[in-house]
Image (cartoon, rainbow, N blue to C red; front, side):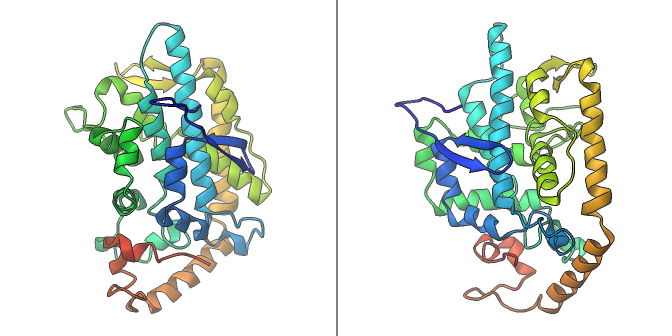
Length: 314
């Protein structure tokens, strides 16, 4: 759903291979048009899997568009249900922030996606989520997007919120709320893009559907049905979580079974693993070569976003 602030906002429509025609807010389109985001066109979603499955050539670019779309769909569905019951749990800024987080959650992936993280020594490793947050800051700064974000009602706390959604923190041992962007009354919003509570999030909704589509496998999980039945409830721990009806248990069984099948048949495929070991060996051979135009090596690039955006895949 598109948002209205000072004037009518016109969304741009993308024809996605999985979700069909999807409309994205103009602020998201502005982010998509940046060099930092366009880089994702050259990052293989499934690393070396295309050496085994010829159709698995899709990129982090299209996956990110899909996650942004589904993040908006789920947040809007929750808002509509609770607005109809007189509960104002979610506002329009929340929806826009969650969509931006979904769009930018994979900005930090390196060549061949997860495989690239294995190139670095354990003490120097950085999670791709952490790099995504640094790249998001770099993207906003380099492209002067802050004034545009302010035009659509987003302030500094909202930018903090977006980065927290990309990599939510766990509560401390005393159960204290660890985030600044939104209060504990909106804790359920942190379960939409990257759900650290039970793993059920729109990131997986998209890559299950997208990966199965390109791998030629069956996806039994129906994310559209989940969107219809999801709502915010107070769970047994006394906290607000995104929940679904008990009769949906079989759809959730399919969610976890699909994940298992994808890992067994594709993500951890024996030949894919061997191919990625060889690619890793090549990257280790060139790890000390300087990146063109910058005084940074391959391993040093993870601390310099200007260098990191030059790293792509085949």
